[in-house]
Image (cartoon, rainbow, N blue to C red):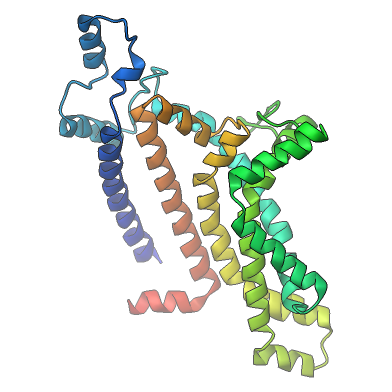
Length: 325
């Protein structure tokens, strides 16, 4: 296990390095932030002074080496717009994004696994067909359109829920959260539901497929032959065996929820990392863009490592294959 963790950690360092090069080159090529940040009425001397102050007068490779040297010290540069640490700005917005992502995954898990199990146990009933039709809609409908429809129905037409913002926050172990108050929940429900829709559809289909496959296995037939109750057969022999791949997918999908919360945060004006990224792209704030993408890549790597460790702990065959490798 320790060899596996060390090898994955070395791979993570290489991935971060390659990603930093690609991101830096890509961001460098999309435009000149000076055209946005400097007053168009400024004279040439003021422009040159601003360019030098931001370090944009140097060649790209020199800028990258300076960025890399700072990154090794934990400094991903200062925002051009806010004139403060890019990493600090991202970490300040991270609790809002994590809260939204966790709420979305909870909704997807609480609804997705039971509905998928029901659809797998009763595939030919009206309820089973309705659940599968709903999962197809969850895959097909664009996130931004669903968000706009949720705002139109529940905020504009019914006036039940607010359409934007995070609501009041409360410090929990030093981290600002909004789910501890009723008003915070009112702000959280719509964006969390919108973000959970695709993952909900995915979990329904995965659970249904796993259930249909498990029902055909010999251990389920043997359990029924022993006279076990249907609830015990489903809860112990079916659900327990299909949960291993589902837990793996949940871990991996949690990283994608964090990364792809950008659309939901933009539609609902949720003050998270994704909203900060969109604002930074509009202003060509390179340090924020690069720092955000590297933080997301790092989070993906950590989540994948934790999922691999959990999977190897649950399934001995994974550890055996690692030992053979």
